[in-house]
Image (tube, rainbow, N blue to C red; front, top):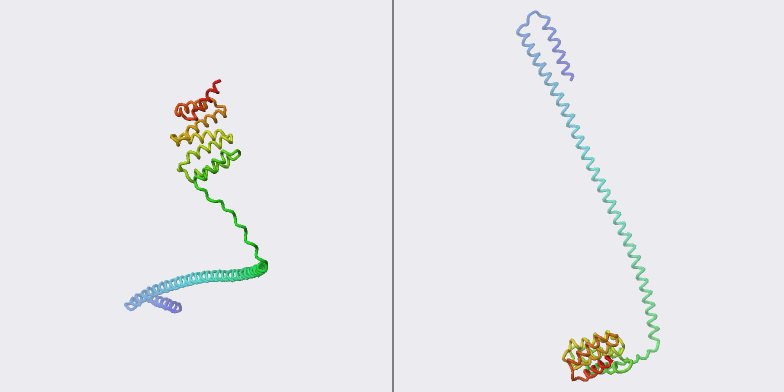
Length: 270
């Protein structure tokens, strides 16, 4: 800035000297041109200085801003690391606390088990000192009946007064175990007899119907029809009873059951 001021002063002095003469000489003209060139260079120098100053100021601001942002990023990263470190320390502390709790729990369980084992050992020693108990009496085992024996036992109970329910259950078991046995139709019939003896006439009617439908050619069918008609009569359904007994006399006219059916039909018509 001092050099610029000196140049301006020299220019002013030179202009005053030139103005003092009458007509410009070639030397004066050359000096004027030099003076103009110096003015131009001076202006360019001032503009360059100003531009450089602005550039320096802008570059400094940018560097300061970049340094500030970098410092802020570093500060944020440092804070994140500090928070993560605190979390890790907290987890380590929690793990240590849980480890201590687990150790205490295991110690308590071990102490409890030790006490229980000691108590059991004491009881075992007391038991060993006691005299041995006599062996239990053997439980009588019922002999396994054959199919025929099971059937005969059930029929005998049905025919026995008061043994109908027990006999019926034996015969039902017989049918479950031997559904295709030759005596199965007979077992069905005697179950119906058991219901009839217990005065469960509707169940008896259905049971006799099983004999009639499932074993239509069996010798027990006439007896089943006779007892079915008698069960309907016990239920005061004389109409159904007559229809079944008439059918019995028509389909098995020479059977003993047909003879009894005719006698019943005759007595009911009076």
